[in-house]
Length: 355
Image (cartoon, rainbow, N blue to C red; front, side, top):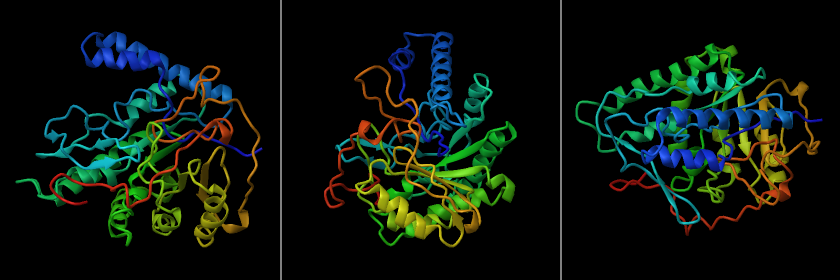
């Protein structure tokens, strides 16, 4: 049997979605809303425990957004930031900073401690990578708040958030680096990606080797509401640059690939041949591998099915906001639509400047 563990966010229940809309509209008080959130976290963890993975998460049930959660509600932010177009025509837009200083308003530790109250199993916590938050500083600059000072404060906030999770007894911290693959669309040469990898390595350099063994990086095509932003970008272009990260664990989304075995068995094997041991923790397209000597290498393409947590209710199809957990059902349960070519879908753009 191949060990598995969940990666990414999990679908929210109708009760939680309704409560979120009601709270935002002022129809639900904060206390009632927190109770619904608590039930959602408890239900998610119970379903994960029933499925049997060795590690559980809260499924990001209560985050307002998996990227902007640390700064939601803070002053000095404007909504007119980087635009991220998806293959189905939708766009997500990041906020842009209008003034300093840069401080987190919420830490991932609070989500971790809530999850730990509902389980005795090891808990993994998703934390936004500093690389995507670095895009909040506008290319035109901010008077009195230069980019160098912004990045210094960002590194401090990122370190504090990760370290708080480590100190709270997290099993592993998962840095969400979904923009990595996306950057190769406007910049095939990889200059932007190399800069973002360097930023993440700056944050990782603040931790010891033993601490970095509990810090991983998650990458994928940016799956969101049955669409993606970079599925047409070949992992072959991403993996060599990703190898420069000094994280201890890596999580790659493979379920949407036209040929997942090519990525898993050939590209990743080649990518990991010098420094990393490939440990196949893949189930339904998710792969998990660690740094280790090659003599300890393990592999395999099969898996033992476990109860599905990717569905709730007979005939209903539930989908994660960013990626499916590796403990979900068989590949046939997840119909992915192909992305248009890079020529038909622009990558990332700023209203006033090209990214």
